[in-house]
Image (cartoon, rainbow, N blue to C red; front, side, top):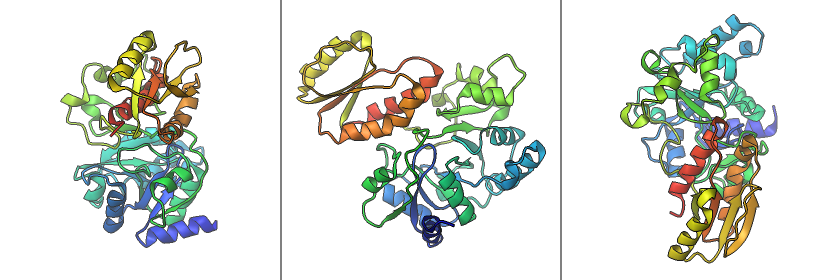
Length: 355
């Protein structure tokens, strides 16, 4: 076992916090069965206690084998430690997408701490893909609660250095697993109301609704029940479980972030500049942008491929936040399902920015 993993296991078993790399973002990990350790997560992040946490689990050995039945049995066994009702749909999604950037909302088992669930009868569980996360989970031998390793509401960390910036000193032991490959938080899918709403995405991510529908309905020509339901029912009129990253203001830089429509860019920029009197502006745009803007002190060109931007988004926002500009003027993202998760994060960052 690498020394860094052994040190992290020792810290976790002693009730401490570990900055854990995953393929999405770095998590602030604690023993999911230790109330005092869980409370350290909330106090360290400045996170309200009613916000639920996601439990991270190790991949069972049997799930590696090319045996669907053995894999399903293995996933059921481990998920039963956290959920009182492991549905066939949960096993299908675990077989298809785990380890990977998918969190499933399930009916919680009796033993799951209310501090993790925010007092709800549901729990979020995921199996991360990052090899270091898997090594840590297997060595620890239990579940780890791990929200993003940043101060509440701020930009999520995608490198070990980002975590150290958020938590300087010795409060958190940080394991360096390199830059995160996905770069934005996991998709969260609700599996607690399958009879009425299907598998309903509550937070978009790299695993899309279409991918989930296809996994659950491989022979269907439609997008599945959840897609149909989402077109007519919004979260505001559903009694949906509270989940991480669902606030309108989140993932936010301290610098004011304005997302503009390129069709009205000059007008928008002029109006904002005149009213706010911005002296220093960072302009972030796609390669084809053709504008003449005043007071631009930093210009960044966005990658045109959605996965590349997802991987770079948070590091980019952190860099821009460090430049001491008055405003980040950020071009609106394209339409299309592949941009949905990034558009979600950018919109929430915009709402929460400048505070």
